[in-house]
Image (cartoon, rainbow, N blue to C red; front, top):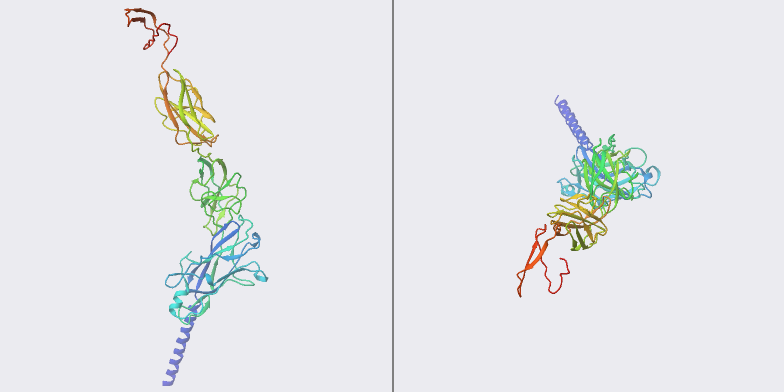
Length: 493
């Protein structure tokens, strides 16, 4: 009986031992990881993408791995796959940032079942000498998304940046496939293949059904344009711009991220001269970086999807608008203001032109004009102050053109002070750029001329040194008397 009990104890002990080993075996193979392709974008003829990892179960200490993908190789000529230096961003067990960059090799398959595959080979850290060493050099992948970046990779030789690259994970089939290994977290730090690998291929978002409307240019300067629109049904909108000609069919590629900026600074669609100048959810934007006196064409495209992952751009019947910037502003004002002639109803102003192609003269009665001309605005001029010249600053525009000196202003009120401002400007037809300051001056017109002269002049009380002169006043407000010795007065005032 005693022997039977000992035998049963032995069986129980063996059962527990095997159960423990089985449990340990299960835990080392219970790791799960998800792979993501993010931040896809073109720069000229180069295409870039990031590879990210996130743990889905167990503990993952990243060891050897092959990351294998297919792509739209037909859009590339003599492509080369490389890793961008300094882009590996992984963390060890204590959360410190480490890099596997020196352990990574890249190639594009050229033969057999591996032809046209993107292959990224990782040789995990080797020669682990201690637990401290393991914890310091081994990348620990946790459940934080968009954190554990293997690196940024570049495919050169794109022929059209408007065509989607369509990168997808290669998980099964002939040739090299995606596979990853993890290490046990304690000695002897054994390497085990991760069986639960989720390959997260970008799946395009739903293409918006409605484009933006009321796409318009609201204002412009010599270096900016203000655009506005009514949003369509997309998650966001992207605005493209091109100098001197239409954007045409140089559209963004689905699943590709683009960065907006000033014209010439934001991402260019290939080498087409088409730049991304706005991207977001708004209904207006000020486009910067433009050249003076130039024509720009804009296209607005609604899109949906996550950035650099699964954008779906609606390029069908995208609204367009075009217009010109203002001319550059002159930097030399007119000078030498002078009134060379005046009457009771007119003034003649003379000056030396500045370096603008044109100039505008504004006149106001009684005080200086309260404001100057507005850039991008054309004004009607009439030298007759009482005529049809455009109202401006409480006065009127009496001249616009490429000379203006001298200009005679008519239709004025006798005995009244008039203030005159002369602005230089470049551009015509809505592209005008006026100087912010003006050459200015003022002058009274003469009073109205009396219609009835004095009469009945006579002398009296003559002495050797004086005489008295009498006359009948006309209708002038005042009189002036001229005297000449020995002969008649022969000059007028």
